[in-house]
Length: 211
Length: 240
Image (tube, rainbow over all chains, first blue to last red; front, side, top):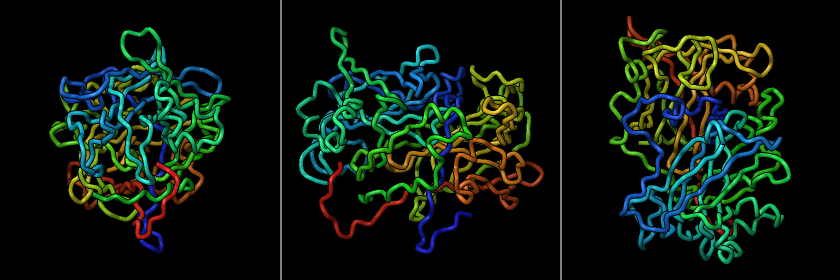
């Protein structure tokens, strides 16, 4: 049915918007009903999970500055040792198999806020080069009006030294745009909370990635 | 486990981020080019799902929300394979879907369309692919419905799909359409994809051979996620 090219490669299936009712399929409780025994995507932070507990939260703004209230957000991150819970990450060294590293949630229908309770990831060894990356979390968003899922990266304000030598942040030509990837720490909060707002368009447009 | 980089995404196969046909995209699509990176471990890895996380009827939308009987509508099977761009089957990857019911109505607190809610239909399902990349769902054929874009815009019957590969860089959400639907060529959302052949790859084919006689029709639709590049010679390049 899908015709390979002359070399045998298959073209990727095209993306389409997740639409306004993405919650039905991926987070049905937010759509307003209960169907599955096990809802995927909540991050479990049992006592066996190692690392510093943090909360990350934010809002997503459209090109007019309005808050988006119907988006789905997924995160994917390393454990506190900078390792991914996946067979491809098979190097030796300590790792935390109790931590999956993946979560999904929706922006609140009223406030537009999304949030995750998770742990701060460790620094990840680079695949293409020496050294380690600054701690970061991949953030992927889909929504009505977003035709291809948007991937960005959340870095931490209080990791200035690691951020300063991070090869990905340094690839961003305009220093002002690097700031769009730095989650700011909320001072005085009881828990370690970081705020990460995403701007889809405009002067503060978030840096998105094509990997 | 494969350690190869993903082949770079061919954006010509995808919709435009900003398309005047689909008005909301004008406010929500990024205007600046994305920053391109080589595949890092975070992209090569991705969440792994186990069969024990799913229920036995999760892929049967005719039964998974039935309260006092069967849902109303045309009973169908949707099946196919999940492959990568190298034509290799992807095994044990998570496929999730959601859809409107036969009246074109979603079980969603924000759906205010006049179509009727079906008490026996939830409208979502999920499964893990088999060893040969195969997935299968049983469901009700969704109805078309109007949406606010132009004043008389209608969505063709469609099913939303969410697919994970082995790596997070393969993550994909899309929509599947049904062969022969006259609304397809008018659809403002499908037409955000400029390439006609790419649009056609979102259309499932009637598969009489896989139908259950006297019971359920079948449609077949294969999904292709990004393939990987063999790293025969490796240079040190900038990136993750």
